[in-house]
Length: 92
Image (cartoon, rainbow, N blue to C red; front, top):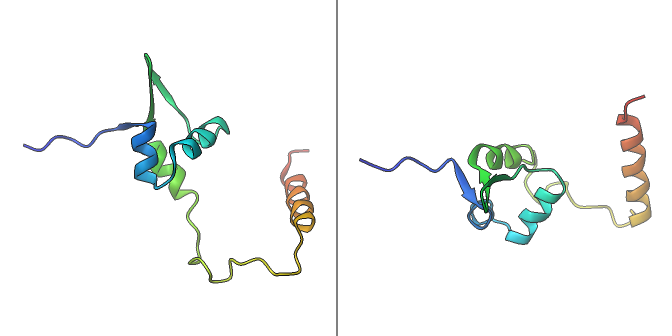
């Protein structure tokens, strides 16, 4: 009989499964984008949370197909565009 799939992973295992570094995963957790489960002295990531996190970041176009920035766009332009879109979404 096969062993059931784990429902939670260590941070290192979750990072490996997601294809990112452990430090990047800690940054994602610190930013509040992915919950961390504490069991005594262990920090765990639930399989369902990791899958949901990755699913919500799926891109609709393959890399290189319209995802490149235009050369005339400056970092300041992108910053202003980001701030204006945040202001539009903020509650009244």
